[in-house]
Image (tube, rainbow, N blue to C red; front, top):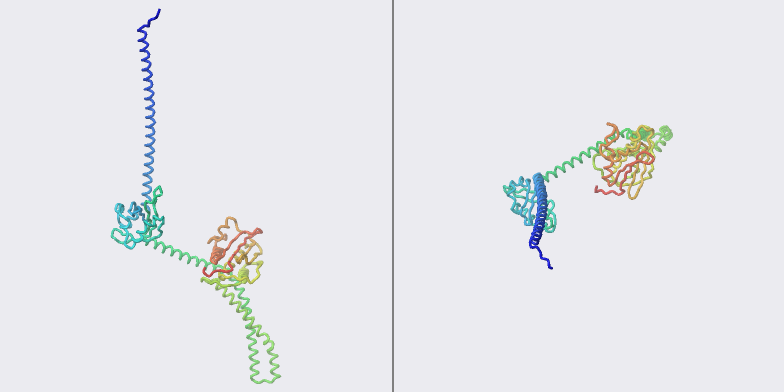
Length: 458
């Protein structure tokens, strides 16, 4: 027997199924809305961050604009920014002060309208120069001010590019020519004052060196002068005897009496002494003349000429002068074989050597018997002269400064600090050099290098 379904039961099942589907659909919609809301929150958050970043960048941009405006306002030089057609896009306050126009006047005007007729040919060539990537340096043009008067300025002009490297215009920077000329005049005046001061310092140091050498030089002069005086007194006595003998000849004295007088007056001895006395006197006078000439060259403030001379002779003279003025009995080892000819300023070289020798003796003050070694030789086309002392040497901290002006390790009143500086400059002027170092065996050693052939163009 077949079963029959219950209609009520079927209706209830359908209702249950429908309710379940409705719940599922509602849950799906809810989840979608939640997802949409999450997305909206993310978008909103991104918008907030973007807004904050935009405000930050706007603030930075505004600060950059303020910074650029402050720089443009502070510039003392004139600034003109143009496009490729010469239309003015930007200027600064310096241009307004110079021309008398305000900032609004320039924008939109062409550069040509501001230039006087004599400056137009130069300005017309600027676009062509910019296209060829050439810069204009120290070019003089004349601007027209508000009274239509010419104002000459010296400008530098360079091309201006955008971020993609395309030419978009040019930038001109300049200043009034009058200011530049005044600056050049002030610079030239300062340079001449400095050179004059340097010459006075050199003369001052020369006189100080002369003061230290007076005793030695006076001794050098006394020897030949005493020799000349002695010879002249002998010649005076001889002249009296010869005069008396000649008068006897004129009187026609008999031969025996004349011979007796000749013996009494030592005429034969006088005749044999006359030539040596004259030669000795002449040699002494020449020595005095040489010393005087050396002193004149040494103390002269004039620029000495280049001459050829024997360096060995200069070294000997300098050492004699300084050693005679030095207390005690200094020991000098002279390792030079002459003559060694050099072409330089003799007076300047003489002063350099005297300064170096004096410096060596000063370094050994109070250390017993002063001892220096002097060496002179040709090395690779140069004349190399070394002067070594046996003092305490040069401290490491002092080494970089010893050739600086006014640097000295002596107590106040004992040194000017100019001797080594002036010697260094004199060597440099003649194409040479002066260096210093400590000797491994003790003491300091100074080396003067001079070219054997020096150009007169210096």
